[in-house]
Structures are given as structure tokens and as C-alpha cells.
Length: 326
Image (cartoon, rainbow, N blue to C red; front, side, top):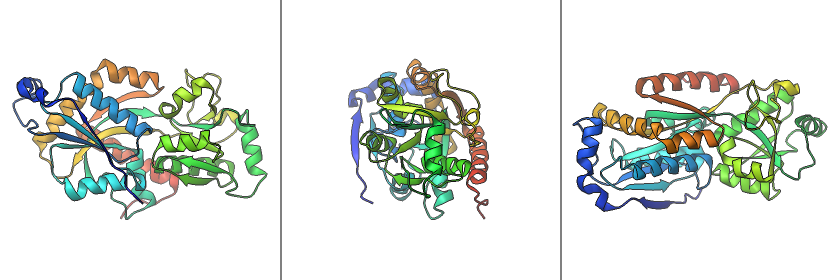
């Protein structure tokens, strides 16, 4: 797969002067960055991961949390494997590199054991949890999830194509397929943005994704939500029923979204970045972003985040019917 690379320099070198003392005061007198910090996004531009990463970058720059400029580098491909492979190969133990991680980077090696993803980085902090919805194009003939499921069941397996922006979406399709007893064919793209583009273009029949990737198009009517994968309806989408109340016994799960460091960084560096990410989580900008996109605040840091991820690993493996890694 061809790996595209987009790099953006955020902030200015002038921020470096005088800000080191601010960072040191805020987070202790330990390690602080001495050169540009690179934020690696292992997904394409325009998807949910990219959007959240840029909010993190915006907060870091606008609130002057770093004494150096921040560089954003999209490295999409392979369900996060290309971007994290880049970090593992060329940024090992580099304290000036941070990486966007999420459920996809954990599910990819479950589905493709040779892929290098979450196990190749050091988790730092989680910011939020997203639920999933099933979307069709706004002018689709399907007005309800029951109509859609009836049509799927009336045709051979894999007749219907769903766009995916990562392996978490593939898992969502797998969960839904098991619930209705019919296989839906996943068509893989590098990001939720690409998946959305193909839905809007009429190239696929549907998408299962998070609200933050579709919010604008939901409001405009360009896409329609048919059902939600949770126990209660979204307050923001009160007219969209849950799968279970629609008679579809689809398991619930959520997408977590956070930040990691390269393997091998010191405890001192981890503590520094945990402090930075706590400031990001507490910012009005991040809180508004989470609320506007019908997600849930869930700041989990350090060892607690690692324990959370161990529980998520078990949940994902159980849902996918995959045994624990040996």
C-alpha cells in the first residue's frame, strides 16, 4: 500500500523562547522537549482519528503547552500498522514523538497478528469513548434498520458492501453480521473520511462508524443513521433506535482514543507527557469537541490506561471469537 505523508508545522519557533520555564513550572523540573515534537497520525486525513489529533494539536499550540513547535505527520495504511511501523523503525525511544492511538491500533494485530501496532508503543493517556451507529446515504431507500436487515437477509452473503476506515469498523461489521446471520462485505479505506466519501458517492451500501466522523452530514441530511450500538438512544439522535430495541442482538462496544509514545522512553518522559495530556483533556476546546460529537469524556492515564487496554483486548477478542495471544 502506498503510504501518503502530509506534514504540517504548527506554531512558531518563537514559542521556544521563554516557554521552557513555563513547562518546567507546570510539570516539574524534569525532562522537557528541546526540539520539534512530531505527532504521528497513523490514519488518513479527514477521519475521526485525524480530526481528534488536530484538536489535540490545536490545544497544545494555543495554550502554549510546549516550548517547541509541533509537527503533524499523517502516515496512513494497514489499520495503523504503517504509521506505528514508522515510529517503531525510526523513532524508537524518541521522547520528541507522540502517536495517536485508538481501538483500531489494538484490533489490527488481533485480526492480522503479524501487524505491528499497539504493542509497539507506550500508552500515555485516553481522552474519550465513541459509540457506533449504522449509516446509509441520506437518499437511501432504507428508512429503518428493519427494512435494511430484511433486504440483506433476502440476498446472498456479501451482496452488501460497507466502507470501513479501519479495523474497528471491520469489527463493527463483523458484530453486526453475526447478529443478523448474514455476511456484509467490508471495503477497506485509510480513514473514516474516505469511507464517508464513498458512502456519499453511492459506491457502498452503508457504513458503521462514530458520530464525530458524520456529524456535519447527519445534520445536513446527507447521511441517515438507522441504529445505534448501545443500550440507550443518543440524546443528540433521539429518533434513532438502538439495535436491541429494533430486535437485533448486536453487542455493544466503544472506540477509545488516546495518545502513546515510542517504546523505550523513560518514566520521566512518560510523566511529562501525561501532564501535557491532562492539560489537553481539561481544556475547554477538548471538552467542547467531545460534547459536540456525542462522545463521552474518559481521561485515563498511565498504568490505569494500560489496565483499561488489557480489558479492551479481552473484550475485542471475545467479540471476534479470537483466542488470547500466546
